[in-house]
Image (cartoon, rainbow, N blue to C red; front, side, top):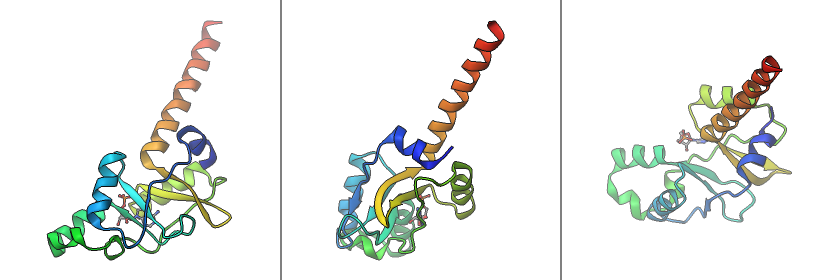
Length: 142
Ligand code: AMP
């Protein structure tokens, strides 16, 4: 399976924030969209960073609540690992596991296209296993 299969299943909407958006605004996005990470981009196409709930927890613990009124650029990860739609699902799972992150933005022609989380991958995997099981059961019962 490829990442394009996951994107087809979940859609291409990506929740983003500008680099000067505040951590408080970021909290609202994470809450409103029920997500764990937001891509930081100033033009909606090139990726400036990624910021997840982990970054908030880490910086809150280290620096205190004053980070809430500061910009997301102060807590984001600037070197973002990205993938393209033709990436192999097994390899992406391996990358997420080895690097301990649960989100990877998908880019097409260098531009932000979609985002895939470990939850999206697990969902597609389960659906595929269920389809395979139904096929096998149908085959046996024939
Ligand atoms: P996550 O598990 O996705 O919540 O992220 C854990 C940590 O990895 C946080 O510091 C994120 O900013 C960072 N992170 C998340 N996704 C990526 C990515 N695709 N590339 C680089 N860092 C990431």
